[in-house]
Length: 226
Ligand SMILES: C[S@@+](CC[C@H](N)C(=O)[O-])C[C@H]1O[C@@H](n2cnc3c(N)ncnc32)[C@H](O)[C@@H]1O
Image (tube, rainbow, N blue to C red; front, side, top):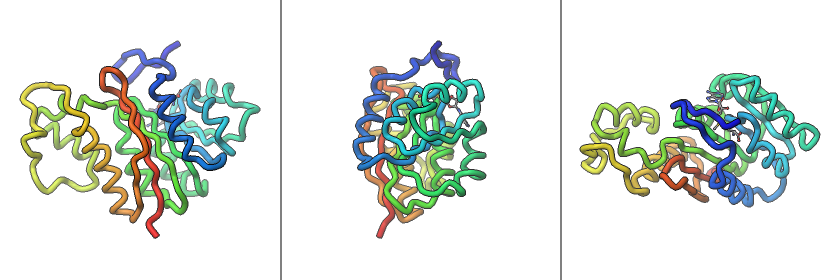
């Protein structure tokens, strides 16, 4: 049974681009580590991560999905399961969990709010790999057709309100598919702002995209600045 996205479309259980991007990022884990999935769902990634983890921490708001995930990993790896909204988890449980090595944001749509909240709460003391599924992908031109929609999305993607109005290249006159550099601007800008605010080093590791330009899959290595 395939996943159904927020916009009621069917999504494959594990897209090959997502799997390949995550596997490439996992190569940066020197030894097995603690892996946190904030959108664990039915556990298609969890069963891959089980081979690379000393412990898996799975979070999802759907109990039935987490039951499926549990069946996929039970007996293969030590795990903890949290059935709740991931924002609540980040505020209430993450502070007690200690260091993690890899965090996965595999959302339908935007996970910008969760990324910001995560770095508000989690103190990076050792290298952290960050995997992101950006469901908006190359459709940024579509959401930035006017200043109001730009402001709406800027609130998601900027830690502070941009001081200047967006330049001409933000203001497509009609829905368009925008160049890759435009998308990189938003995703990397969010991670760069996080780096600056929390004195972290953020290195982009990889970027894979689906044939129609969304979603895109991104990997970062975050380390504390010495
Ligand atoms: C793309 S699916 C995850 C797929 C999963 N990583 C896998 O490999 O099978 C997105 C998941 O996020 C969950 N989700 C969406 N918003 C959430 C939230 N605010 N808190 C917790 N889970 C959420 C949905 O229930 C859904 O299972």
